[in-house]
Image (cartoon, rainbow, N blue to C red; front, side, top):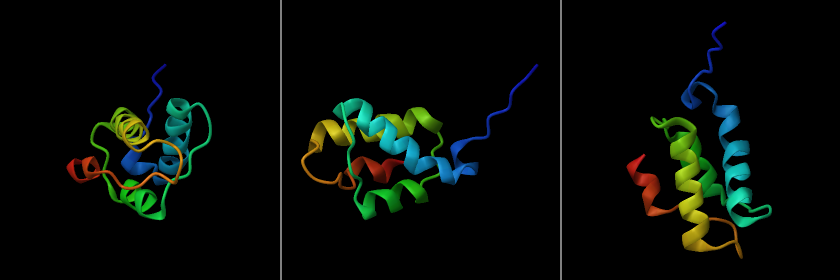
Length: 79
């Protein structure tokens, strides 16, 4: 039996819930995303799939902390 999981670019509705999940995992609790970061996430094709999204969100939480909504990191430009 083969289970086909479509890439993230075909599952836009999963991007923001996944980003929030990844951020919460790094921050040990819920983290808000800025509107700008949410838009940047939705515009990206995510060629590395969930691993790329996880890495970007984790890097953003580590660099920016969790005090305020997460901003769009410069790293978003490479995806």
